[in-house]
Image (cartoon, rainbow, N blue to C red; front, side):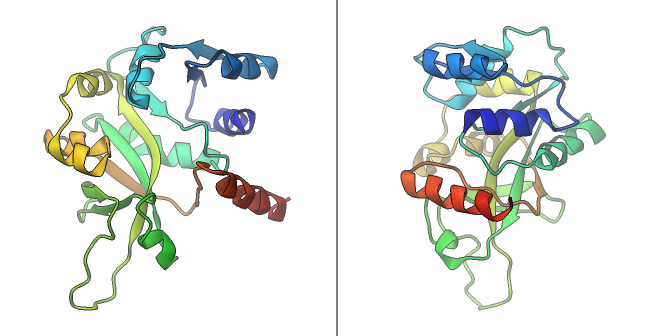
Length: 217
């Protein structure tokens, strides 16, 4: 799986380099076995963001350079998703962070707390992320629901600042790191993508992904 995600990420025109940051020697060995680049990080990190911050310390990056956080358990990753993700930061030097969203078409996803929902303002900036269905449709009006796709792009300077911020109340309640950004008054640009992803967190997820990959062969 990690090789598949790595090779898909390498196909994104917007990335200059792809490196796997891990605290597991087995993963590092597997990545290097297929010719990829891997970096060992501390085993004490509580979040992927902490690991990312340690990893970028090994590279000579400018403060305005863009760092993309890609999860290794997203085998349906499309290279174009990465290009969509970073484009707003390329276009607007004032933006510090971006992520993706995808329309929810299945009511099971809407009610699944493992599927994070996001609502945005009219300019595409995140208002809130939640594990609950949002918005609450009190009037029964026609409304679109969106799932959050867990790819992130950051300016290096903001990523370093974000990692030093104290965990916030809403972040703790929802167990969602990105809420810390909003609670501290920063904006997250949310880009709608047509591509659907499935994070592999269980054997059932893996079987579902394998079926989908077989269908597109």
